[in-house]
Amino acid sequence: MNEQRRQFLRSFGLVAAGALGGWALPSFLQHYVNAEGEQDGISPETRIKQLKIVLPKPTKPKNTYVPTVRVGNLLYVAGHGPGSVDGKPVVGKVGRDLNLEQAQQAARLAGLRILGAVRAAVGSLDNVVRLVKTLGMVNATPDFKDQPLVINGFSDLIVEIFGEKRGKGARSAVGMGSLPGGIPVEIETIFQIRT
Image (cartoon, one colour):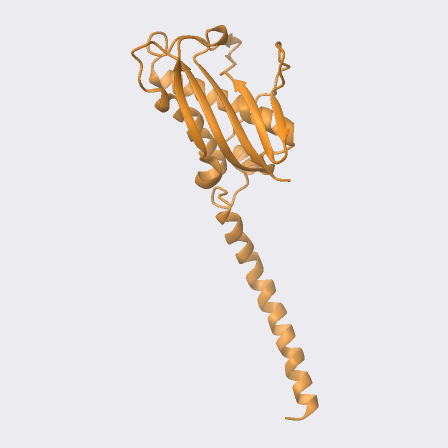
């Protein structure tokens, strides 16, 4: 094979490899993003818009603490309750004042407040790598035994936004004799954040 023909085949091979890479790379990257756990390849911020979810703006704490603390690539989020609905605070003891469905809704509301605090701390929920840990506290009657089902109201919201892989973390769900202000649930979390 003469030198000119060898050079042509070498150049053609480089062009073909570049074209193949340009065609295959987006597909590979999309698979990689999905492997990271995004909901069908959709970012958390896009997913929130699709679901028409409006995150509440964080309020300044009245007591001696901050809503979030970042240490390295971990974001520790202070305990959040459900806040208010139509200007009225969500309060009551689960098993007496609130049924399971109402308590799950309160846990979801607490989750929305947590996500608002996370967004305020890191700029975008797209900067969240995954949920690491959840502690869910339920203000319940002594005979109430479905604390994990109550905290599913929070966990299901997080999976809905971040997907199965990024939205499921380690979790504890415990009963409490009371919670601040008589709220039915308080949830604190740890998230891993992109560096």
